[in-house]
Length: 308
View 1 (spheres, helix red, strand yellow):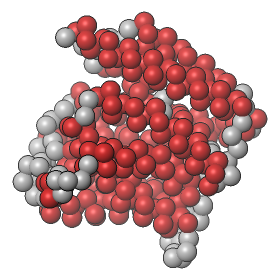
View 2 (tube, one colour; view 1 turned 90 degrees about the vertical axis):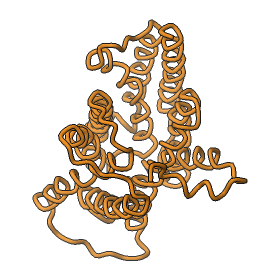
View 3 (tube, one colour; view 1 turned 120 degrees about the vertical axis):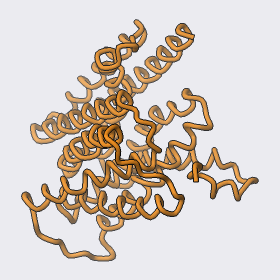
């Protein structure tokens, strides 16, 4: 079966694209807070390992349910390996920093992803170039980061160190996405994700065994347990399916707006639900980064029109 979204066709009167768009927006806005909560009662490495294992098991069920082919040829394996840099290395850094970095700041740092990708693409994808507007956007975004790192909340040596860990994770995630694009093998998105998850699970298992190795007590009332379940089901599967669905149905500009909106929502959720401080430095730095993202997306679209 070629169309993994065929079950949505049974609801012709529902605004499916709107629901999928709202789902991606909601999931991406809540993921940083869920990562922070998942590490409250469990060690970060166990939280990451259990999330990826559960997502891989559920994804396998979806793969068989929708009869999506799962290729194992050399090019597909190279794609899984390239994606592993983002799913394991990037996420491991992010989870390790989660107990120390506010979720709103984490979301803001991941909002830098499109800008970092723009910085890497001219070097790795030879056909990609940057406009002057995009270069200006990059400079503005790094100025915003500089303001954030002067904040009293971040200037603490421990928080600053772990914030830089998250930023390194964003860099690796962006690099991974470009490498996957460069080595595109035509693998179905669900199969690509599942192959990467199963490649990552042994890495997480080994890391957990070396750094921790103890099974924690599981309590139904635990925030962390429910956060892991949420991340496995929604963050790793539902969000992924919805994202690729809207990518097929909407213009790139409309989809790109998600990266502009989610940091704002994540900052608000962290402040309201997790009592995270929202200072003037953080607000000003966030504003500069969001303006930079708007400029960058606008420059990218103009560059595409010039090429066409």
